[in-house]
Length: 489
Ligand code: GLN
Image 1 (cartoon, rainbow, N blue to C red):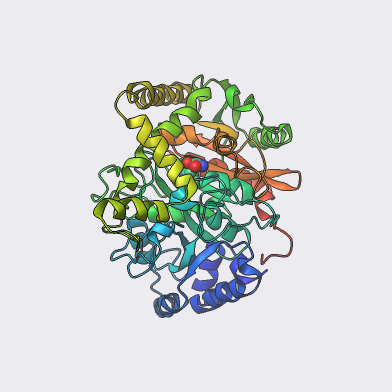
Image 2 (cartoon, rainbow, N blue to C red):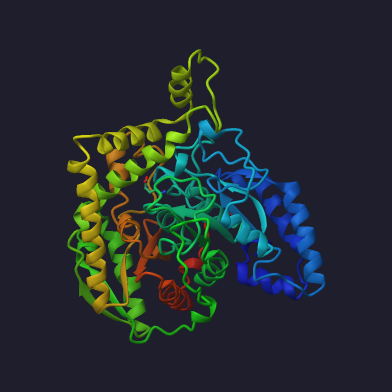
């Protein structure tokens, strides 16, 4: 097993026993990246020198026996939509090319304070809009299980780098599934915390009422370690929750006896879902039953409207959030512009990619006078109904189990000409964002020799139960330990 193939927990153990140094780990990541490591096109910016300085400092702390946290000295990646002082943040968009942040995002501050070594930024769909990481100025990321296939998106670079063994942990963002679906496609763990659990300060906004940062890793334990570092109140994000952060790692006791798992029939009857994927998910749920959990049927009757509501609300918020990219302050300014209005038009036309333009147009339309009531207000009403569906379900169950995606990783190019097809593939993930509840995707097994994800959804702020169930499953199975052939781990 090569160094980066170790989990975060194992890396921490080897750092504290001094078998390894932080510089060793960094060398391994950089070496792997220079070798086969980036055939997946998962990393868009390496900060080798700055990371080296951080690793040297971490080694000094570790030698003194003063580690700052369980990830002190461990290399991780952030997604290219989280700003870091002095570093470029492009959001995989031409419009932000060359934009260097003057400050650190809250997530980066948390990582820094914990002593993590931020080795660079991972590839993504432009402004996190997409489900395949194909909408990137850096070119598509590829799935380590099959390079012809997509790693999912929009945090596809993060999932691919964890799956390939380049790093053991990475941060993603999830507005409608962008952590969980790539985790499922790449056979890793991905968690979207409760809305407000992790500060969005310094996360480039896509849809502010849905966006949430979370961890990708190989094990539930590693996800728990990262979430513990990220979670907590931040007065700079007005939607951040002032709630105490439990010790997520101590929740992992391997015991799910009596846990009530709700099975929503709507999620298993979705049109177009691959029956082989559904079977793998059913079998994973059966494993949790064998561990002592109880299953029961629940209903989430408004599920068929979730995609429509999501794509109305997300595009509306995006059209407003992206109004700031006009050539005046951030990023790209057209050289051809002669007047102020040409500066706006040309900078935006040249700077945004097709999918982002499509969303701005849709979002502007649904917010415009005359259409607002028909679309935007209706979508908000559906959102309330979806939320109350979950509240009712959680009166009788503790977690809800579903597939993460209706299919395994699709081929690059397979859906890129058909936005509707792409949007429909988010059917299982968007509801959690609309309801604000936490969700985790864990490797459940394989279909067509590709990874399948089991999604567990929980009550608001109950990430601990999701992590405990995920960890219990991983103690009993080895799907997460399977590795794509020919890669690092
Ligand atoms: N695939 C969804 C979209 O395109 C979700 C993206 C995300 O979670 N950032 O909007």
